[in-house]
Length: 171
Image 1 (tube, rainbow, N blue to C red):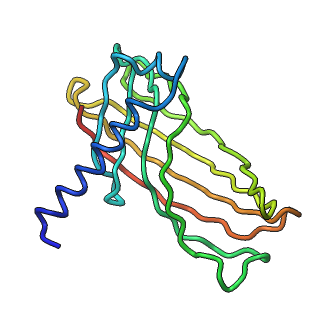
Image 2: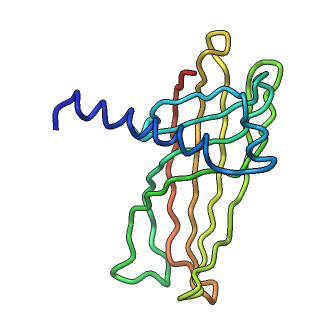
């Protein structure tokens, strides 16, 4: 694939995430993003990331990104257990507060999400940071993700970690 086509496909993926960000959600979720500012670009994993902030840039309203992590099998792993985890994340409105220096961040957990067929659960742990740069026209930061999959009895199937993901975005 040519570099030009590859570059165009990456920006298409970013545009698709922005479109999803603009159309997803309702109620309070939607109210925080209306009229806000959207930053977009690629992470250090060469995957799209979008950060929406409120109009006055006082809070992060939503973060959307794709990530990939390497997995360590647990005692309940089988030979078919994947050792790579890829996911697209659309965080719930976390309302990360932006401080007077233009920095924001926090940790949160999503899940456990049960699989109705097997009873296995998936849990995601997130740590996000960001800061405004160039008078608020760019944003840079980091993301770390830990994914844990357990059997219905609580035995570890696998734990996946993204490692440090960095990003620099433009509005």
